[in-house]
Image 1: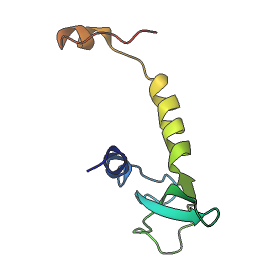
Image 2: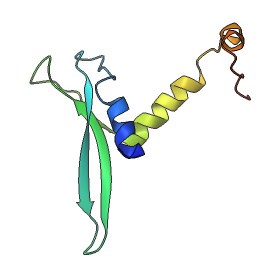
Image 3: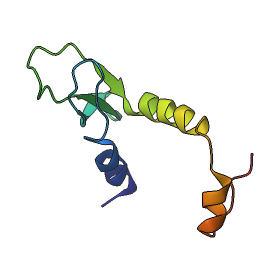
Image 4: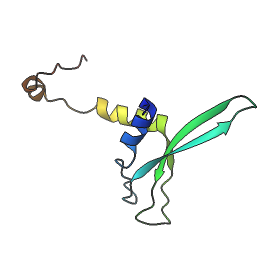
Length: 92
């Protein structure tokens, strides 16, 4: 399994849409730019398990990763737990 597949599997079904309560799942789309080049896009969209008429949209994987990264950068770090587990604190 490639790192790309692992990343997609890790994000699929763990993100819940607040609007409808359904989970997000990855969809891979290919777009032909010209006769030789194809661009691959990965989007996350609603599974619509809680309602077929859900209005939740799609988000590009790159944008989703940026949003998750911003959230994680703002999480408080418990230094005591880090020391108890023998880990090093990240450089700030």
